[in-house]
Length: 348
Image 1: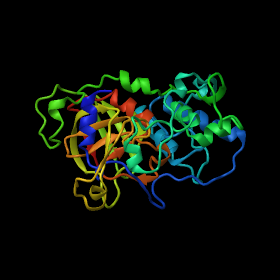
Image 2: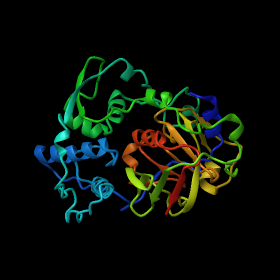
Image 3: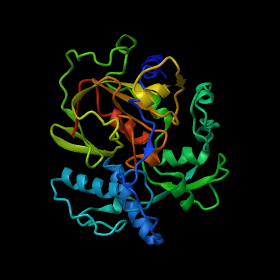
Image 4: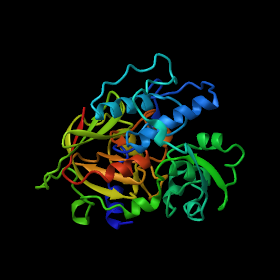
């Protein structure tokens, strides 16, 4: 982990970052509708197909949620097709005609837990001062680590493995979604274009200098809560996001990527959260998958605003951030691999 990234994120305000609050009726919510095993597998197959194509449906959970439907529509758009009307009832199968889902085979993998999977575990206290004393904000349970690794949540992992997720040990075999695994080592090995340097950390309003021409563009639709990536004008990827609230809206406008920080720290300042004013009473929270900013911070040329990961992938699309745009950790890493300094980011 680079010290540069730590110093940079320590200076970013809590106001502009991620601490979320629930918004009734906001974005994607699923009714707890009982479903058959066949319905669960059909929904999971579509979700895994879309996730592999990088038209991400959010967490894989065997439900036809709003983000699955939105991702499917954008996938069709990327192929020059018209999107079918969304299903009339929640959590019912959308039209998948013309899409070959047979590539998702097997649907679930038998994964053997390794010692490395259990390396980044530890208790994370609820109190912020106690969190600030830790060296890292790790996963709290093996089930949490394995679930994030395979783009799902603990509930679905438990559904796939009844009675096996309470005490997971190295050597245990678990059924998991057949996706490209996310791993913290991927973050450490990532070489983003425009990794933030020590002499470029203090002034977030600094105007961009000349940057190499880029054919990549990022667009964020605040109405649908979907982020899309375009290459030479062609839609190539899409990810669900959480955007700002009515109190602290994400900054609508046209911006540019300033750089990328890996495994960031987080500046917890109650005054900044409540009043929008920085105070001398704050705590620096250490990096890790349970850091409020997640594992990646993509800085924009707007003070204190960026695209970043999250400590709570369940919250994507279901709660609001304090101005920034939040993605699941597995998605923000994939996004970081596609962008570099100077890439335009349109928030509309």
